[in-house]
Image 1 (tube, rainbow, N blue to C red):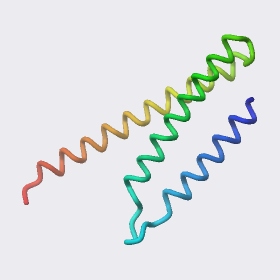
Image 2: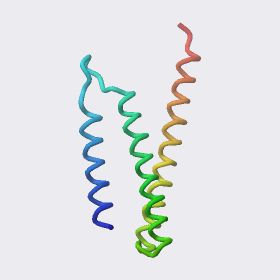
Image 3: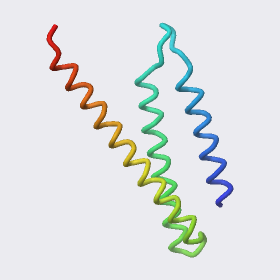
Image 4: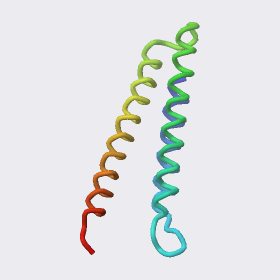
Length: 99
């Protein structure tokens, strides 16, 4: 299970890096698509953590792996909340600018 988690995480990170660096038609990076990908990965991370908890409860997964996956999900949520806070601060700063 550890190898599966490691390979999935590596594959997801590579896919995200490639997709985030691909320009859209007008030459920029599609911000909305990047956010959607991040939220989808957050959802997947939480689903993995829930599955790990279930497997641990029935004795099919060792404690170390279950804790690692739950901590990974917690870290992903913390990162997402900080990203949301930074985007909200940027929006508020822009909205206060005089035109």
